[in-house]
Image (cartoon, rainbow, N blue to C red; front, side, top):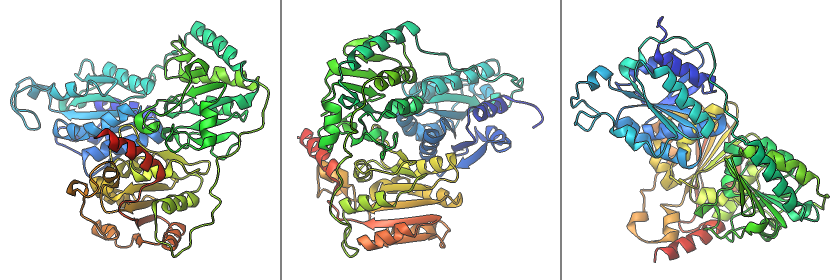
Amino acid sequence: MDTYTVADHLVDRLAELGVDRVFGVPGDYSLGLLDHVVHHPSVRWTGTTNELNAGYAADGYARLRGMGALCTTFGVGELSAINAIAGSFAEHVPVVHVVGAPALVKQAQHRPVHHTLGDGEFGHFAAMHADITCARATLTAANAIAEIDRMLAAVRDERLPGYLVVPADVAEAPAERSTAPLPPPVAGTDPEALAGFTDAARRLLDGAADQGEIGVLAGLLVHRFGAGGALGDVLATGVPHAVTPWAKSLVDESAPGFAGTYSGAAGSTETTRRVVEDAAALILAGVQFTDLNSGLFTQRITRSRTIEVGARSASVGSAVFAPIDLADAIAALAPLVAARPAATPVAAPPVDPGGPAPDGDPLSQAVLWQEVADQLRAGDIVLADQGTSFYGMAPHPIPAGITFVGQPLWASIGYTLPALIGACTAAPGRRGVLLVGDGAAQMTATELSTVLRLDLSVVVLVVDNDGYTIERAIHGPDEPYNDIVRWDWTALPAAFGRADATAIRVETVGELRAALAGAAGFTLIQAVVPRDDVPDLLATLTRVLGGAQK
């Protein structure tokens, strides 16, 4: 590979953006391109058991690293991954999807080659990606360098997925090695708009007698748009604040002023609701209210006393100021909040005064999630799959230094198992903790073999409640469509060639405690809980969802 090629330029640019691993499944249209990945000095290839899981893994990687990438083959491969790409779009995750396509010389013949619809047309699948990517490009030898750079810059700046079709002959086309990096992001903030926003925010905040009358509700977009530092400056004052379930682990939950997780009328404590709903001035920082993120839209927000900061605009009451980047708007608020008189910090969310459950008690949803929360440690990456795992963990305080990953908007069950691979490879040295229901885990269970092959340090906790419990809680508790085959999860490591791996079935509190305390390297825990038991927050949500079906 002495000749520098289009494929080399693509992989070099990915490395420049911090991507050191590409996930995927090989196909004949992408094999030549993959040679340039595996021979790159700083980028590695990680194969997965299918393309959907590669997309999930790239998403998990991007949430920790800032950008992720996968490579699939044309047609059958890319469409297998399209669900994952749509989820990344919905949840603002920058993932680059590289598709190896038939050579342009073959496409020009318009013949019915494999992995196509047989009509001689090659643009169908690119069109399918139009609504779930921020930028798309189909390369030719003439446009390849410019289009690669344009697409990657868009993914970086918009924090959304991009799609790149690389015909096999274009991948091997000679290219000139770039000597300059990608152009930096263009500042998106208009100074006049920011000044107007700052003045309006100051007037609203001046109506608060002290910092205790100001509330901050922080959301997912703070993380996605790199505004965590600016938010930290606002919260350093000790101002009362909460997070949405979607933004769990965004802030230090042990810090002064933290009031808990806000889920509207579903599951929020009185302290949390008071901080958000009764504030004289409320700052919504990067919050996107969705049905499952807001207690089914039961949030009580008074617009006239709210400062709302979005990805590209900000508002005070009904006045909108744009364009303003999220980080710039939050940074402008920090001195305004600090200028208000200090107040007594908000009381911490109430803690259950009851003692620990006896070792001999059978497991329940309530005890399960409390025990898991108690065993987490700083540095853990916790991935909670949609369902009892996410909504069981969301209300529990977790230690500082933990990254919490969920997917409550796209809500594709099974996502977290492959995403575990991406997250752990993005942050080597950190322990992964996977919390997933048995029904969800069955959808992507083959990726446990990849976890074992990569020798990742993870705790995989499978909640064995014999089926689709969240669907049973919504509708059809005894219907066969909510049933699954019950697996012996402890037998899977051996089936995947690792009979030495730790795999334990637990049914009591004491067995769970011992398994969590002794977890080292790879540990799989099959935690058996009652079939129809659900966490309180999820019970509230499913009651309303169930009523909506009638």
